Image (cartoon, each protein chain N blue to C red):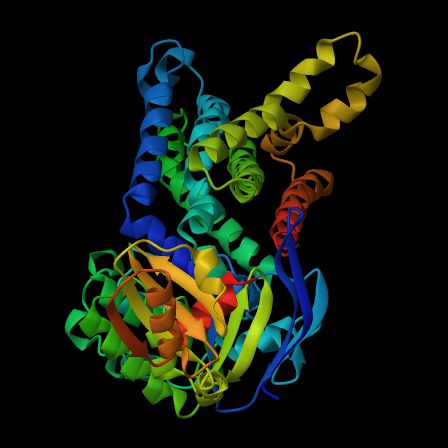
Amino acid sequence: MTITANNLTKIYSEQKAIDNISFTVNKGEIVGFLGPNGAGKSTTMKILACYTLPNEGFASINNFSIFDNSEEVRKNTGYLPEQNPLYNEMYIREYLIFLTRLHKIKFKPLARVDEMIEITGLQDEMHKKIGQLSKGYRQRVGLAQALIHNPPVLLLDEPTSGLDPNQIIEIRNLIKEIGKTKTIILSSHILQEVQAMCNRIIILTKGKIVADDTTENLLKMNKQKLSVKVIFKKPVTNETLMKIKGVIKTHSSGEQWNIVSDDFEIREKLFDFAVQSGNHILEMTKESINLEQIFQQLTTNQ
Amino acid sequence: MISILIKEINSFFSSIIAYLVIIVFFAITGVFLWIIPETNIYDSGYATLDQLFEIAPWVLMFLVPAITMRAFAEERKSGTLEIILTKPITDTHLILGKYFAGILLVLLSILPTLIYYYSVYHLATPTGNMDNGGTWGSFIGLLLLGSAYVSIGIFTSVITDNQIISFIFSMLFCFLFYILLDMLRGLTILSSFDPLLEYLSINTHYISISRGVLDSRDIIYFVSFSFVFIILSQLIIEKRKW
């Protein structure tokens, strides 16, 4: 196991940020932490990166304990914190050279700096101060920071937040490329993000793990369900819809209802329901359940 | 530790902080030493730098907090502390790196005032007729006093993420330890604590060294002074983990 977390609990002033979390990550996996804001993604990462300690539980990276071998853990881990903090008054090269010194990289540190600048595509900007860079380039500097000592494990906290669509794709490709040789945990509250980069997803809500499976399995698990979008002419209520046999969950946005059911003939039943109650159906479409809905179900039902 | 030291020194010199501190220290001590009628050397009639060593601790009381207030407060506010603390470097080395960077800047501020020494040395009749031992002792005492101020400044920078708060607390503590404890000795209520107050006051040891005798007790005092504040800073950084 490259990363092990056992019953981690972290309490910030009486509030449990994470509550008894356990998981393991194998070498070469790219795992996505998914969850709404405040679900405990960042806290878990901070613990793994040795920035903060759990109140209960145990974690290790490459068999080095975060308690007893914190320095080894930090040597083996590249960590990109949320918001990507940087020294704005430093030049890119100056910053990376500073990092090679912190990591005590003895073997050709300057060559490593140039290599990082090339890998992250910072050549054109390398003579600028970090404070003058656009957000996309700042993110690249952040990635260079996490990668400079060539760690086997990467912890990336919201690596693409605040970037424009082109930049997101660039950073994603960069992470995928790097991910071929490394074990990565990345967090996001955006689903497509995790879907695009990770082969395994851990969904967190309110400090607890509500799902931990491969992306395909998570999708498969919900194949037995059907989701239908309906617009009725006259207003209907949640209670009356729930009375229809087979309806598991309803959700309305404006006059449009989203109905999840385990009955594959739910569309017929909805039609009958409309006729019986003297209502009319204006629109009805079948939707395939995607991760978005699974995510919604898992994180709002609690 | 060296990596942090180099980074701090670079950041002092890449902004105007370092130049400002060095120039302001040189200018203010110069004004008191050569220009202001009541304190200048010509009027005193003696070839001594006493005025310099009397005014310098007060000037440093403002300048050192200004140097050190950024040390941790800014890193904490901008979040870069999270990056540094998750690198393979111990908290002690991080603090010591910043501490020695501060001392280095104090040293760089004191160095130009050697020109005053050179001038007075040559103004004296006959040339060189001044208390050389005492003057060198005072320079060393001033550096040690600076190191004590820096340790206070590092500590107050650790306890807050607000630089202004750090600056004010730092100045307050410097004032307290430099002279206030010494002044309190006059109070009858505290008379039983007199020896303790005297021992704790920076001024006692500063004056003692400026006589030109490097007493090991004074050196030990200054070293332990910094040691205590560095340990306190370390405890506070350690506490974040919980």
